[in-house]
Each structure stands twice: as structure tokens, then as C-alpha cells.
Length: 312
Image 1 (spheres, rainbow, N blue to C red):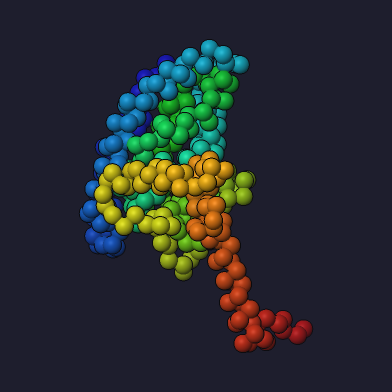
Image 2 (spheres, one colour):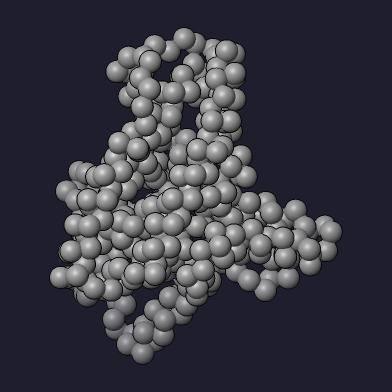
């Protein structure tokens, strides 16, 4: 049984690529990097590593115990690794989707989206509190099917390595066939955008086909500048605030809310409020679409011939 961590072996490559992108940004796009923002991202990465060391072993031990109840004995073969990698990526899609659609999960995942810059250092902006969400339950079907927990961990490591390089503006589009199947910088820029058309789209880890299958795909639109970050920007480089601000927000909302709404602030989508004082991503998109429709009607009324077909 292999005993290694792909992500640990990839760290030197991560550092080298960040330095290369910094040189590119210095020459082509100076605004891509902001020193305080980059330091915050690096601190996130360090804290996430420590959190993983503290709690990862607990979850791995639980998986090993559950593995005894597996349905099949899946061998350590190339096809098993390939199947595990694909199924683990499907699992990642749903973990990621829940991370955006359930506030309890979002409180942890929001850390990754909190930067208003999009570069390779943003990929290191990982949560410290993932263990609180109990998202590990999404991996239980793989364990019970018979995939060894170490195999799942290795596949998950390669999944994270793949996701590193797509956090960049230095790459425009990949070949069409690649864009059709795989997650790319273009697809993932959409995911990190706060533009109404892009909110809660492109949850994929490696294979963008999951988003196309489950109706959450959106292509990057040429000519529309992407705004990165979160709907209500942090406005601060304070590391502890960046890590815990959404957890604090949940506690405050639940404390103030009537009893019948308290759990909704935990389990409903981010932005939901019982009094409508804030907006969810769906509401923001719906309002934007209505505004777009109004503008189109306005243009059409000013120039009624524009919407008519030419006579044959």
C-alpha cells in the first residue's frame, strides 16, 4: 500500500509557479498581486496545513474502522485508482456545491473566496475550520464501496494538485476539447466571480462535465470584467477576521432571530434572512436578469426596428 502525500511532494512546485506568476504579473498585470492579500493567503495555507494535521488523522481512523463494513474488496490496481479518482471528483463536486448552498458549510468554504485578487496564491487560501462542517460524510460511500481510505486520500491529494494551476489570469483559454471536459482557469474564474451571472456556478474540481450534467455550468463571457471576492467584501486583511467572520455572523443571526427561524440561518443558503434584509445568490441573479430584461425592452422601444427581422 503506497504511503505518501501527493500535496506535500507538490509544495516546491507550488512555490515555483507562484514565483513565475509573480514575474508575469510584474510585467503584464501589476494589480494581480497585493502584498498584504498574498501574505494572508499564505497564512491561510499554513493554518490549514496545521488543522489538517490535527484532525485529518481522526477522520482517517474513522474511515479505516468503517472500511471493515465494505461491500467489495477493491484492489490496488490502476483501474481502481482511475475509478476512485473519478468518483472522488464527483464527491468533491457535491461537497463544493453544499459549501456554497448551505451556510453551515459556507462558513468554512468562504475563506477560499475571500480574496478580491485571483492568482496562484489564492489557491492556498484554504479553511482552518473544515472539520466543523463534517463534510467527510460525503466520502463514506466510497469507503463502504470498498476503496481503501489511503487510496481515497491519495486521489483527493491529486485532485487538489490539479486545482492549483487553474487559479490564474495568466492563461486565457485552453483548447476547445479540453475546455469541454476539464476544469480550466477560464471556468474557475467564473466560480470565483461575484458578477450576478456567475454566482454559484462551476463547482467542478477536475471535470467540468459535472456542472454541465447537473445544470450549474456558466461559461466565461468575453468583454465582461470579472469582480472577485464575496458579495459583502471583507474590507480587511485581519487574518482571524477572515477565518472566522462567517461563523461569527451565523452566531449573531441565530441569536437575534425568532426561534422558528434560528436553524434556517444555519441550514439555508448564504444571504437568506427571515425578513428579506439580505439577498441570496439566486435573488441577486434574478434581480440582475430583470434589470437586463428592462434594459433590452428600453432599447427595443427606443429603436423598434432593431428587433424586427428583415423581410425576405
